[in-house]
Image 1 (cartoon, rainbow, N blue to C red):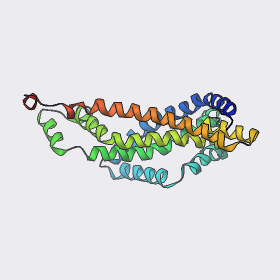
Image 2 (image 1 turned 135 degrees about the horizontal axis):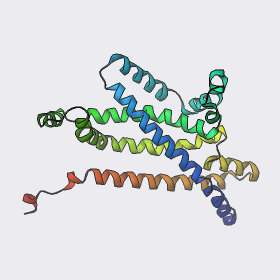
Image 3 (image 1 turned 60 degrees about the vertical axis):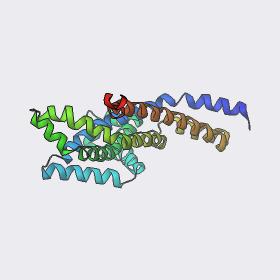
Image 4 (image 1 turned 90 degrees about the vertical axis):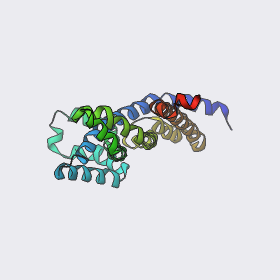
Length: 234
């Protein structure tokens, strides 16, 4: 195995890591914010809002992400109203289209994950909070949201990892992230195995760091569950 080629390939691919991280960060942030709106509609009790949220989740969970990305990248430009709008300078950029499609897709999955977390909140805890005068947004902020997020975090961490791996699809809409650069190197060198091994190593390291960060977050949020009562210590 040519170690010199591997090292030069690794250096080249590492230069594309910031683009992959930008795709990942923006899509997770935008998708997370959108998912909060969707899950609020889903559990609102209003049949119309809940129906819209159900339809959104069904569409974006039931269709392949690759097709969604192609529809955003190639399809939006087919509408004259979009080409003449103020959004067109942004929507014609491959990076923006990739972030938009990734965010729309992950929002559907994340909304269902958060809904599962909300359903895991014990009614007794809500009743206890209401008994001391909490209601409305205060109840959500102090009781429902923290508990629901702790329950949803393990599943959400899996979705976060999947989003990092999904950024590789952006290469198909001409975004030169790690996979896109790897494919370009392969077309130049015809050394598929070595290039993809380097790309896989980069994704493994990135996902390892993400999982470690999510693990630390989960540890900090569940510290009270590991606290040993003083009576037990004695």
